[in-house]
Length: 263
Image 1: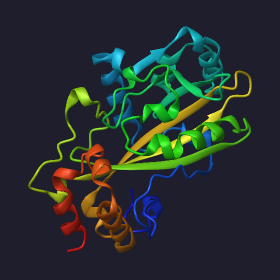
Image 2 (image 1 turned 180 degrees about the vertical axis):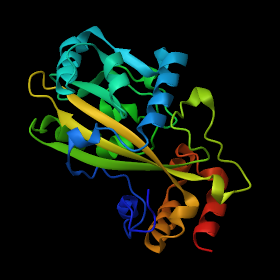
Image 3 (image 1 turned 60 degrees about the vertical axis):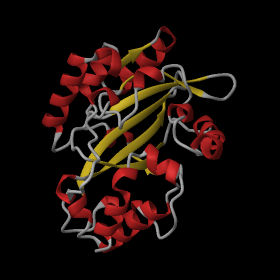
């Protein structure tokens, strides 16, 4: 990212205390899934994850056969399944199937770059339950997420962002790799804000939802060069409940993070 101009991530931190939000804005799914300037590196890391631990990163249940086939067609491929999509797209993706109860269940996809969660443990769960370890998220946002997905129109896509802090720029941060590395003493040059650029798209034939996830790393020292973002991140970390700071793995360096951001 070019930090000499106002970056996209500067708006991630509003002038308010920390809170979970499912805020979305109109997006462009075709642009989201198109190639990027870092595509070669991203695809190398995707190939590595799929080669070393396919059971942790690639999923395709029988219930999702038709939705996967429609996803393949939407991607412009003539044949294949989730593996072919995983080797074609840079972002991760989950295919969520609608249930009569109004929930959308994770039935297929490729998650090569999870942010410290185990995709293999989440097959068959609704989207908000994928984040079940997050304190207060389900009770505050679960019903809202289900309602939003139910109302999605196939002719529009919606984009949102999520963020965390990591001690590694590696894209694949599956818990089995233990590579988050947030330990004392704080070294700002080896701390990254990990942003997840996310897209939600509903397919017209099966009604399934494609949930795309593209992680982006921004160095903490670069954030420090943008006073508005720096102040917003400081406030978010300062007002974050302790259990959420624990979930985001921020607690070990929380005090040092705040001291650095406001120094």
